[in-house]
Length: 167
Image (cartoon, rainbow, N blue to C red; front, side, top):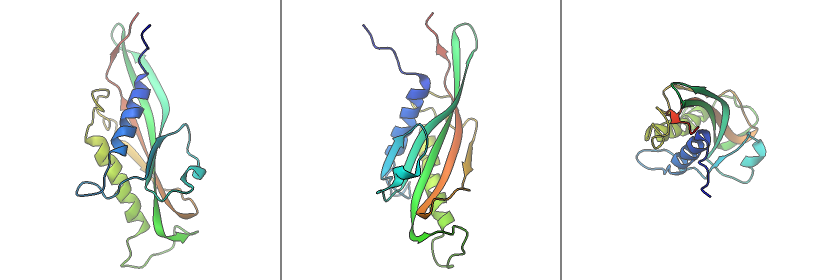
């Protein structure tokens, strides 16, 4: 008996994870991630023992609609946690930094940029999606983990190419 295909959401999540795992520091990217993984929710303890950067991917809400007869369209929200460590430990992310130091904001922005560049390097995720950034991406930087971790969360909604439903 044949094995059924994975859901479109599962396939796109795997494609995003694979794309991020392929990042290597050099002329295109700032950092090589230490860990890229999928998860059901984000937990600070998962960063324990890691140096970073760490990219964690989790699916959010999913909307499925039938377009034309037996054509299914899926829109899935994905969250990508971007976590990178600063050289200096802090319990105050709002403290001013020395002018000549690379700022915490710059470190996070570089890691976010790496993720966005990786995603648009194959915007259809191997012909699974219309365009991974068709609906844009929202970046939230307003959360903090005590210590050296600097974080941002990227939220995007990926529209899968219509699938022919087997009836």
